Length: 92
Image (tube, rainbow, N blue to C red; front, side):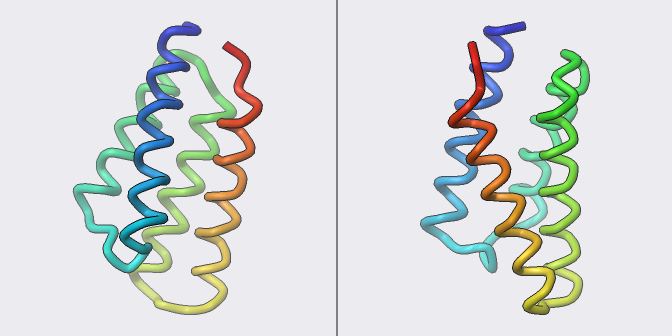
């Protein structure tokens, strides 16, 4: 499981880096699909906390894409912060 967690975290770091450099407005459905695959992989491996964080992140991105509002954008960045905290404190 630790190897899976390392793999997911590494992929997640790349995704968050891409968002930081390209901007949230450039996130498309294939990008969201990558995050959903990580969520599924986390769920299959019983990494529940990470799976829930990824689910919240995807949900906030989709909400922002549907309604470009300040509140939805704040949710996206709150979820980015939560994921960043998770990555920095993941023990493997």
